[in-house]
Length: 140
Ligand SMILES: [Zn+2]
Ligand SMILES: [Zn+2]
Image: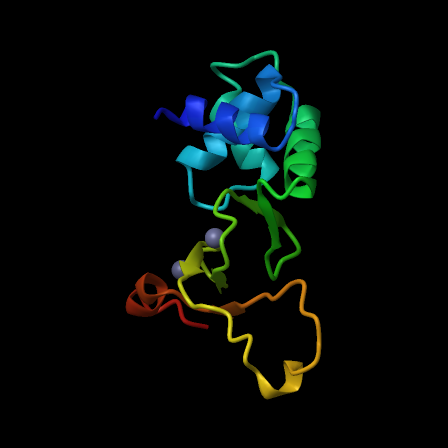
């Protein structure tokens, strides 16, 4: 299945109308799992889709996050990033190169402190310096 078909299938399954901006932006996020910002998504799509404005990138990502087709992550610098992987995973934020890596950990819902609670959301995030930045001596 192509990324376009995948985007269309997921949008349809969520009961959303298939508009060109939604398909193009979602397809971009499904094929670029680098946690881009709206600016980065816009730069990535504008050449082949001159009809899509930065404002519609903001609107579409917000809508798709609302519908749980994307997750919105806020980096330590306050910048919003979008992720098309919606299964639970954590994120590592590099404070030097600003890269965001996925952490494959599973949530520990057996936590003693959560016994009897109804958890609706759990986030795992770590920050520091990525291996490449450490190797190059940029670790703080
Ligand atoms: Zn780094
Ligand atoms: Zn991620």
